[in-house]
Structures are given as C-alpha cells and as structure tokens.
Picture 1 (cartoon, rainbow, N blue to C red):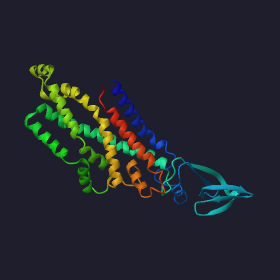
Picture 2 (tube, rainbow, N blue to C red):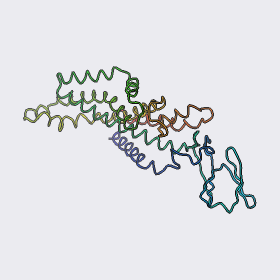
Picture 3 (cartoon, one colour):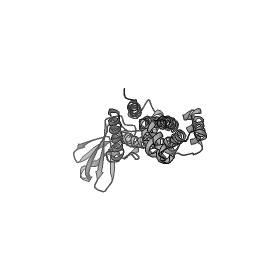
Length: 307
C-alpha cells in the first residue's frame, strides 16, 4: 500500500509538472531578449530593459541617472539616452544565468524537463503495453506461441540496448519527439514481457483458473478477465523503472547528438551544449545533471519491492 501511494504521488507530480511547466517559465526558453548583451551571464545576474516611448527596447547590464540623461552600460559598449524618452524600465533576473545564446537557463531547464518526462513516461507506458501483450500471449497459450515470442524477446535482449537504439536512429536521421518515443518504446518492452509471462504461468496454474476452464468459459475471457488483472499488478511497479531508464537513455542520446535537436531543450542536450564551453560557462550543466540523476534515482527507489 505504501509503495502504491508513492507511485501515485510521483505520477501526480509528473502530470502536474507537465501541465503547468509552460505557465511558470520566467522567460522564453527558445529566444533571448538580446543575444549579444545577455550571452553567458553567470547565476543571479541582473539586466534591465529600457522601453522607449517610440517602441524601441534597449537591454543593458547597468544604468544610472545623471541630470536629464540615463547612462547605461551594455556588454561591449556604453551609451546614454534622455530620461524623457523612457516609458518604463523592466528588470530581468537570471537565477541560473544564461547560455551562450543569451537564453535563460532556468526556463530552458523547466521546459527541457517537460520534454524529457514526456518522452520517458509515454515510452514507458507504450513499452508496458507491448510487453504485456507479448508476455500474456506467451504465458497463456504456451507451446509454439511461447517459444516464438520468447525467442524474439531473447533476440532483442542479445544486443546491447544503446547500440541497437543507435543503429535504428542512424536510419531515421533527424529525431522528433514522436520518433524518439517510438524508438525507445519498441526497444524497452522485453523485461516486461518476461515478467508478465512468468506471472501468467503462475496464475494459470492456480485452482480457480482450472475451475473456470471446467465451466467452459472461452480462453480469451479467462485470459483477459481473470488472469491478466492478477498478472499485471506485480508488473506495474516496473513502469517507474522503465521511465527512469528511458530518461537516462534519452539524455545519453542527446549528449551524443542523436536525440532531440536544439533549439528544443532537453536535459541531455543542455548538458551537451554546455560541454562545448564548460570552463567559461560552468553553471550550465549543473541543474540538468542534478535533475537527471535525481529523477532516475527516484524512479529506481519507488520501483524497489516492499520489504
């Protein structure tokens, strides 16, 4: 019961995060207000946007009032402007700094988390459905059906998963969110299939199934209504484990340049972009790296069986 509450809590948090993430972004995660003046700012940097009455906007790093003018300082130059031309001054606070293109790191991390979680959760659910179907057919019908399906499972398990994914991706060229979900789903169902098959064989041998068969109920009815609900419950605990594994795999693929391509952020490709200028922009990979590690660890912890 405690484990079920943990899974429900985590699932509710993920759903809520995905739904509200677009509404809590401090800045646009794709475009910088000023690429030149806001690039590579460290954490807790402050900038200002001078909005002129004629509609023009000037992004500055500092300013001060002097007589009838505002003296401002940009990254590579300074200037001044008459105070009467200013309509308002907006303050920008970059809690986690900006990247080399002047985009807010916090906004990209929040948005990238949504993409990573969508890929992880949907891929895990599709993998679970595929694995459940294959395991159920193999476990219930047995014989030649069981042998064919299990040998197919063994073939997929025989290849290193990351290598197999890279081979498939090599033939699909540029990755979209949908294509990556499908690829990761089709290559993560094997463990579920084996687990469901084992549970089917276990439940199938119980006395109440023998009674149902003696009553003349159709095989499909027995399998779907009586065996599957009992066999599927122990396997549900694997969904968080697969989700964490998919998020980690997606991060590796993005880091290698085979995952979701910029400007769409994911935790993986944010680390990949940060690696190019790691010494000068050390703050870029810290939060995405922590979130990947924390998410995978949390998924693994809630997938552990209760003792």
